[in-house]
Amino acid sequence: MATKIIFSSNVNSSLQKGDIVYWCAISGNGVVGKPQMLGSDGTVKEVRDNIVIVEGNYNGPSTAYFCFSKNLGVNKSGLKGYYADISLINNSPKKAELFAISSEIVPSSK
Image 1 (cartoon, rainbow, N blue to C red):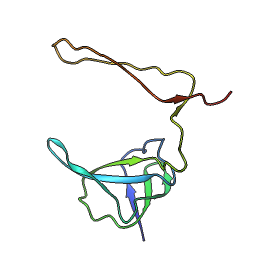
Image 2 (image 1 turned 90 degrees about the vertical axis):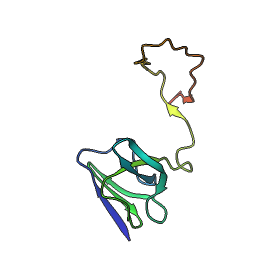
Image 3 (image 1 turned 120 degrees about the horizontal axis):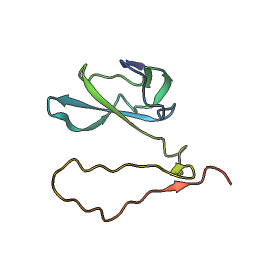
């Protein structure tokens, strides 16, 4: 049996068939507890704009935080591309030091 999840806006464009969906309960302070796999295996069967169809039954709360992980059998490489543009913002009035930033970027073509 499959579960249809309808969101109020379009889902993350990185979500694709074969990814695994997890959920967490939320409260006024944010996410509560660790992510739990949706249904028996949480595998995404279909993605359409704001609708995600996942293998298995969902018996969690009606207001939950959903996240996903990529299928490692299909997505074996890191980020693809030639450059990255990032912004790091410190919203604290205290001094902060950054010691390192790293990533795994694979050229998308050669």
